[in-house]
Image (cartoon, rainbow, N blue to C red; front, side, top):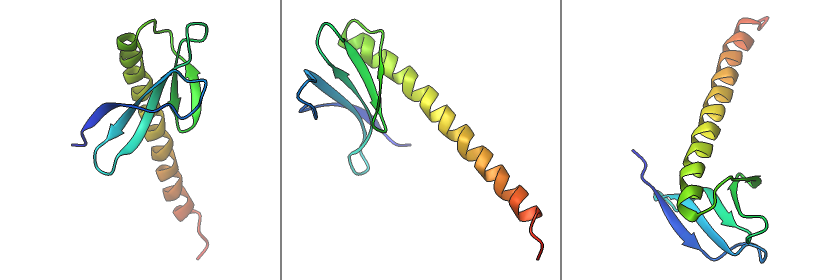
Length: 97
């Protein structure tokens, strides 16, 4: 099983005050990040370059919410690839060879 860990890093953008990555330790693969953009904007999630607002008011709340966001993201990705896999079978059945 892949082990995931929180890792505070230097923010990638200058308007981010704090950045915490979720990383997999088989090559330091970044799965996603939570970033703090200051009191006015608050916490946001970053997955595959897409940012979304989090409702969190604290770092601990942001981590909990990010776990839910990632769980939903992974479920969506799994479903997407399952649909593609099923379509491959249909494509194979439609070949006129």
